[in-house]
Image (cartoon, rainbow, N blue to C red; front, side, top):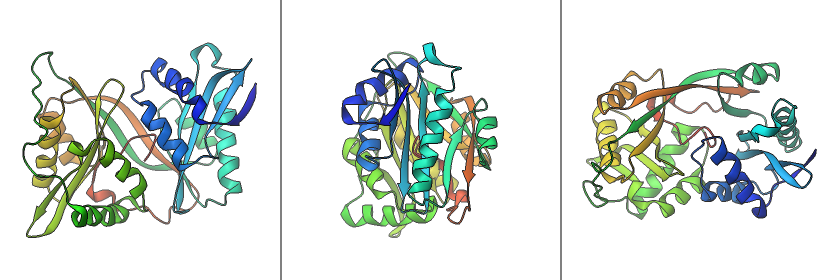
Amino acid sequence: MHLRVMTKLDVPAGLRLNTLAGWNQTAADWHRFLGTSSDGCFVAEIDGRVVGTATTISYQNRFAWIGMVLVDSDHRNRGIGTQLLNRTMEYLDHSKEPTMKLDATPQGQPLYAKLGFVREFELERWILRRPPGTVVASAHSGYPPPTGAQFESILTADQSVFGADRSFLLRSLRDECPDFAMAIWSNGSLQGYAFGRRGLFADHLGPWMANSRLAAELLLQQFLGRSSRETLIVDCLTANPVAVDLLRACGFVSSRPLTRMVRGPNAYPGKPAFLFAILGPEFG
């Protein structure tokens, strides 16, 4: 097996692996990883064929994110995933990243714990499957898209809530899916905001932030009305009872648990109390 840095030529191979795993990423997501961390994404090759991947993203050198640890099902249980994970950690240590974070499945959590990761909080993936032929999207309904000044206010607020600047990702989401870039204002004050992605098999809501139940509900309803897909995904905090109530009331069903884990000092935890849904396990 050979480990090396991932390039744009490997995007089809990465897409093949996440498709086989039933993950929702698109080629655009892989290009986001590579555009953000050109030296920090890796593949594992056997006989010239990519059989595994792992990605990293640095957020202002406050903390780094590890994601997309994927291994071809024909090559699992050979330690490939562990070697890829170790390679990302070596890279981040060499880059002097003080903190590493990731969202772990129950299967991966014991491995991450052995490597020094500890629990930060719990997440849950919720899925809505709408009957075929019942979805009528209206991209121009409700609130208008944020203006230039408003969008900058959203980016400033997000840095406080998330714990670091990720404006490069939010701008990318806005540019790709402008109808999913939403915000609620009251007397000129930002009450909440949300973004979304059109994934491989579902539309994905996140990040979804609000300072009240009303703002959160309005954003969720806007997303439901603007999406034309039958399947929708939201990754929310289990400790946020309002998020859970809103999703359940709209017909979402809990799909799988995730655990946010951190290695190193958690000096920039953000403000999870305002967090209804994360951007995604691969981004944070």
